[in-house]
Length: 175
Image 1 (cartoon, rainbow, N blue to C red):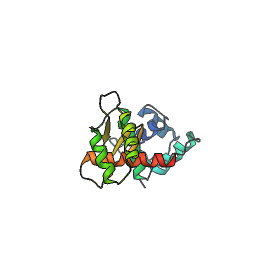
Image 2: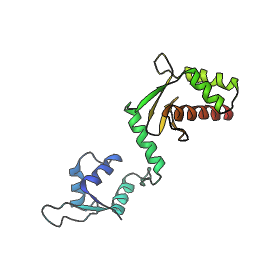
Image 3: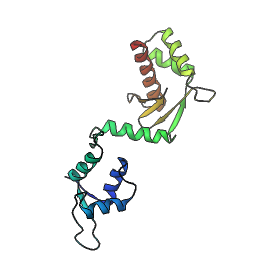
Image 4: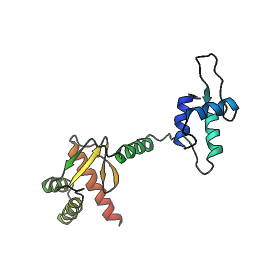
């Protein structure tokens, strides 16, 4: 069982939009609205059990099921989108028609599919002259979607291109 201090509890409560001030958390603790362990010394602060904190959050947000996310991929994805919304990327790759042709040939796919992929990639210029795909950590942003890179390749460009081509193949098959 985890124990939170006032600062940690405040950050979690702020996430659920229950308060914007640490002093509110301290006041709730002093008044007994939020269960906590009182300070043991003058320098010590309040401590809150994780279970008590979640009970407090659930009482005030009945329409939201506040549970800590245990799925690492969901956490990674949420963090990734938060960084992307701030328009922060590790870099981008510029796509050339020859790169697409090489990937398509390696996957043994048709020339018609190669043309479709190239046309789709050409439309993804994002305001630049040549098609480019931004990436961050283990995923890239293509057509407003987070696509995990294909880790079977050592080069970043190949990881991104093969992942995007596979994404387009699946999108075309299922439409």
